[in-house]
Length: 305
Image 1 (cartoon, rainbow, N blue to C red):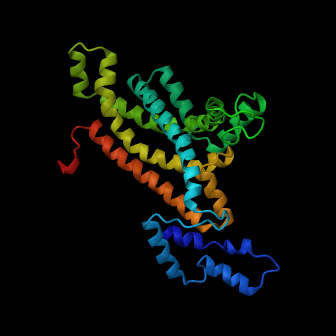
Image 2 (cartoon, rainbow, N blue to C red):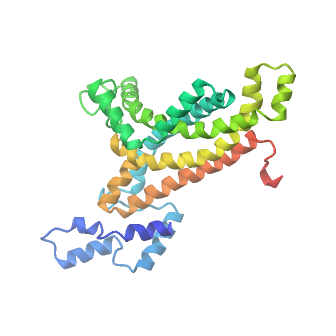
Image 3 (cartoon, one colour):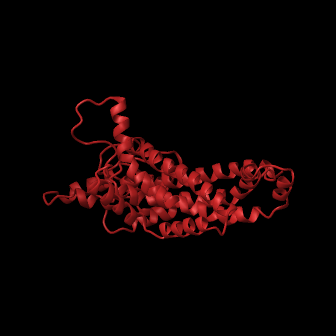
């Protein structure tokens, strides 16, 4: 948080600069600075900043003229919906594909999917997004590429109409996230699965006469998932970073879009709150992953047991 405070205030100018008009007198400008606490010494601003954020007080947006919490309450669920769904899809498809590729490593199908996955993984998210917009919105006109719901032309909003509009708009950004996101977990699951196929418990399961599907799903896959759980933290961090790009490209009204607008407007309260919430998302996911370890690996227990 200290680094965040320093970086934001290292930007040239302040949001007060955008409020000043040629007709304003120095006394009026000084009153504005006093109103927003910018006349205080930097150390005092830092102390107030830390106290407020420890108590969840994000303050009031100078550019929107509303409490920051009001903006967050509207936008945060939209980011969770989009990137939560993207995370679930990526870490469902990726481990499943990696599991089968690791089990039948060296086949033509494995080589083709592995090479295709690496190609997808090397593509920038913004380039993929623009490509999908051009193909599915501009050329084919199958999906919508902007906003969360239809902005015009809807006369009678019902829950079903609203849900259909959301699904129509979320499909393209969600597809863009999953298109690249699944590859990371696949690249970890594939060698991990290949390693566990040589373990004694796999040979023992086969010796008992269990089917290949049972050996694969019940005995090998569970242990191969442990490295994937670790990689999920990195994957989530990339998704959070990608939220800024994806939401900007698709005009998705979430935290990432709010963050970019706030940075350009030098809106300190919104910028600080957005970074804070994105950090909380990553820390929370790390906690969930640590808890998931105890289910994937029985050797790991709470309390150092």
